[in-house]
Length: 266
Length: 266
Image (cartoon, rainbow over all chains, first blue to last red; front, side, top):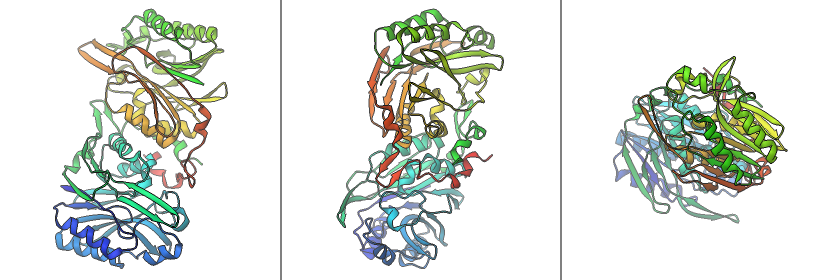
């Protein structure tokens, strides 16, 4: 299976241009599953709830989901992408999983970063894994990386490939995602954005370095910090099913959930 | 507060020599809390349960605990050390916390590595934190590093400094402990051993690189891979109490234990 990240520099508010740029980069490359960054179609720094509400889209009726679904169907491939979601329950920083048959899954970011909290609601549905052509795909978004619970839960639910759209500004995520791949023995595809965004008195620089990490922590590919680029790796997802670190250690059967109750205490 | 690791090369079975070597290295240095490696007094590769039983010691009556307690009292400092524990409940790969008033805490390693499972029993008491002079100390041993649950639980219980005796043979731990310090915002002191051990048809090379990492992931000190050495850092443990990553993100209050039930499921 060929999986790829699409590292982009979205322009704030230029939804159609951003979609076209993403499609164009994917058109020129060949993979079974592409991962796009968080909020790839809208850009990141919203300055009002009204602005977010106007740019957010319904899933699957919105134009971004429709454009991705059309591309996915035509090419016979799957996509994961971060988009702002408008729904009756609120506005969410979501990732969608699109397969040739349409939108297959939606994950609403649980752990919102910084000023995202002003306008987005946190997801309350938790973490899920979907089957795409026999491969179990888990979704998480950006700042979820710092909570080890997220990748752990996705892996416990059977995720073989964790797809991780991101708009990173802190420096530690690439190495932390290696740890996630070591401790859970899963593939991790992080698709980060690049460039600067300056809006409403804030300026952020996004760090690129999108990457694909194999179970056990080998970095298969890591992108530049500052260029738009696509990276594709040929992987065998089912090796994620083997949680053995030594002949005597299986990372999942060695867990001691009877001693972990503190993790769900209040 | 000055915390230090003591990176040693224990000689298998030479308990008195190993104790004296450790005391000598600590005598020549000045810290409030020293961390020694896992099984620092016995060496690592036991070839029979009988051999382990003979070298294991009761806590606090055994000679190692007594020697450490005496040193601790004389110098007015605290120590963490990995030793093989013999008790009525079995044989454990334990870490002890010794303060000038005596043995303050014992942690029995929960996640046993490789052939440790042949002769040691896993701890069933779970993870604990002790107060030493107003500083909260958490203990974990070696392979516990790969289970994010362990450092997480210690931090949730209030650990400001996690002391981590180790006999590492896999390569990923130093970077993973940086992730532990980032995701939990605690200090982590890993005291690893060095050298090779060849016994009973097995040969292991231990990787050194003991380290002290600050909340947020800064590596304050990292030792060589192959020399006996002591490293001491002057730290302010109470900064561990602040779990803020941004003005809007506190790593602990941002957690969503209501969505984490999978972690304790069976």
